[in-house]
Image (cartoon, rainbow, N blue to C red; front, side, top):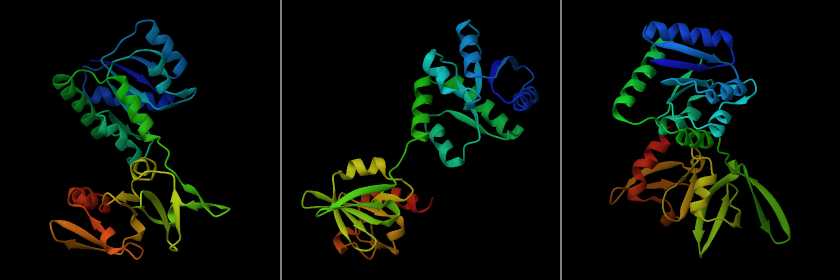
Length: 251
């Protein structure tokens, strides 16, 4: 198996190459590249490999610049210093990763996964990698501009108890009990609110996890929340959302 390592830290590249030989002596590192620019030149010259090990941050930019400029369908295993939450984006798209500093056990598992994927699936398309990266770097709202009379106020998301759909409008309810109309649908709010903090419990309500005081079983396989500012009929977790809600609480 032929491998190319794209890594701007010389010691990290050498360490990875040595570990690869220990994992599988038949692996041949055909090239080690240290920059976006050199990578583009190398691939433009027709150099190919079975597998790429790619660091995300290189000295002259992000390695995704390489894939945006040249069509490369070679499977990729990323080497990265990102934390576990961000790395989940890659997992969703079946893109493997190695968290620095790289250990031989993790590397063995990654290479083994690559081999299994090659037997069962076609090569991972670079579009999937790019989509994973963009999802990983998605920006969530930290505040909302609201208007009350002639006054415009900025409300921090940590000061929001919940959002509720009432009378064809979406209402932002603060922890202090103040209510403001916002120009968003609940569907759009689901995409811009930080998902570890906010959850849509039913068709009418998106709640802040810090607003939940207690959770009780409720008839028809549903759940009922104790939350100071929610009306009783608003505080029911719909049956189809119960499992996701429990997983959200358990993160």
